[in-house]
Image 1 (tube, rainbow over the protein chains, first blue to last red):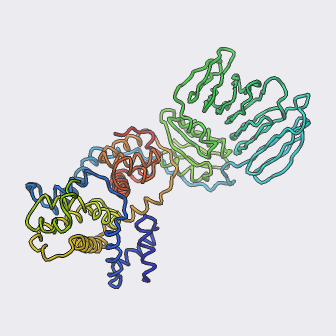
Image 2: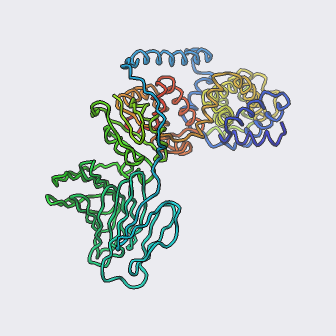
Image 3: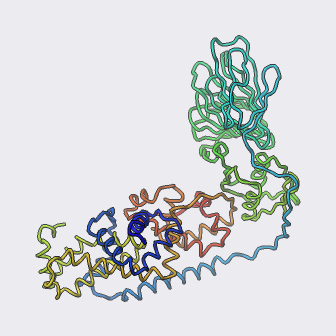
Length: 387
Length: 198
C-alpha cells in the first residue's frame, strides 16, 4: 500500500468516514508487515500532536486511576477476569430476559398467496384538474410549466413540480371569478393564491377560490385535506369552509382534514390564530391545538396536537399515531387510489403508529403492513384485509 | 492541576523512580487523556482504550526502578503507549467480536431512516428491551434516535467523547438486536417516540 493511500484511509478512519469496503482495506493494512513503520509513525504523531478533542470524562479518568493507583487495595478481580465476568453477566441478563419475555406462540395465520397485481398500482404523484370560471378545464401534472390562462387581470402559471400560482397584474377585477382545483385520488398539488396564500392539497381533495380576492374577505371552500399558509392581510380575513365548519383566519398556518369518509373534520393550527365556527359553536384555536368538529356541529379542542404528524403528508410521509386499522387503510386507499375491503369483520381494537414514505411502492407498503401482522391481498386495485 | 507547578519532567522522572506516588499521580493527570484519546480514536472502543491506558501507567509504575536510565520521560511514555496501542490493535483486529463491533460502528455513520408501522404489543416488547440498556446507553440512544442529535452534540451533552457516544449506541443496538425478534428490531427507530425512557 502506498503511504499516501494509507494516510488517506487513516485520516478518514479517524473521522469515521470509511464505508464497509474501505474499512476492510484499512484493516488489512494493519496486518501487512510492510506497513509496520507507517502505523507506528501515525500513532506517534497522534500522541505528540494531542490533536484529539478532550475526552472530558471524569468517570473514565477515575476508573482508570483506580486501576493503576498503587495505593488502591486490589480487592477486585484481576482485569482479565473482570471483563469476562461482565460478558457473563450480560449473557445471564439476556437469558433471563428471554425467559421472561418469550413471545407468546401466535395463532397460525392463513397463508397469504402472493397475487400478481393485474394493474400496476403506483404511489400518488403531482396531478390535478383546474376548472376555470367559464367551466373550461386544464389537466395539470408535475412536468408542465408556463402560463395557463388569465382570469380578468389575474395570470395563472404552472411552476413545475406540481405547483400553480395566481398573480394579479394591474387593477383588481370587479366580479369574483371562481376557479376550482381538483386533486384526484393518488394525487397532490400546491397552489399559491392571488393574495400569496399557499395551499397544499392532499389526494382526493379540492379547493374552490376566486381568481383574485376583491371582496371584503377571502373565502375559499375545501373538500378533503389541505395545509394552508395564509398571507397576512389584517383587513381581509381569510375563511375556509369545509363540510359544516368555517375556519376564519387572520394570517396563519393550519391543516384541515375533512374527508367525508373520516366522519369528523379536524383543524390543526400550526401558528397564528383561527376561529372554528359551526352552527352550534364558535371556538378560538391556539397553535398546537386540534379542533375536531362532529357532523352535528359539536367541536372538541385538544390542546396537544402532534403538528408534525398532522402535516406529515405535506412533507411526503404517512405518519400514524394511535391510529386504528381502518384509518390507516383509508389513507393508503386515497394515496394509492385503491379500494379497501375486509374479508372478515373490521378489526377495531388494534392501534398502529409509524411512518411510511409516500413514495413507497404499494408492495413495500404491503410488506410493512405484514411486519405488523396485517395481512392483505392485492387484486386489481383492491386491497383485501385478511383476518 | 497543582502538580504542574511542582514538577517539571526531570523532577517527575526522579520522584517516580524513587516511588513517589504523588508524582506518579501527576504524570497520570498530565498524560492519561492524550493516551486514552489516541487509543479511542484508533480502536473506537472505550473499553479497549481504558485497558490500554491502564496498561501504559501500570507498566510505568512497575518499571519505575529503571526510569533513571531514561533521558526523556515524555518520549519514553509515548513510545510505550504507541507500542501498546499498536500491539493491541493488531491483536483485536483478528477477533471476530471486535470486527463485528467495528463494522457496526462504521455502519452507524451511514444509517438511513426507514419506515414502518407497529402495533401496541410490539411497543411493549421494545419498552422492555430498552430497559435492558444501561442508563448511559439509553441516554445516548434516545438523544440520537429520538432527539435527532448528532454524535458530536450528544458528546457535549453527556460530557463524553464522540467515539464513546457511538460505542454506547452501537452496543445498545447490538443488545436490542440480540433480544428483539428481527421484525420488531426493524421497527425500533419508529417506536421510540411512542415509548417513555428512563
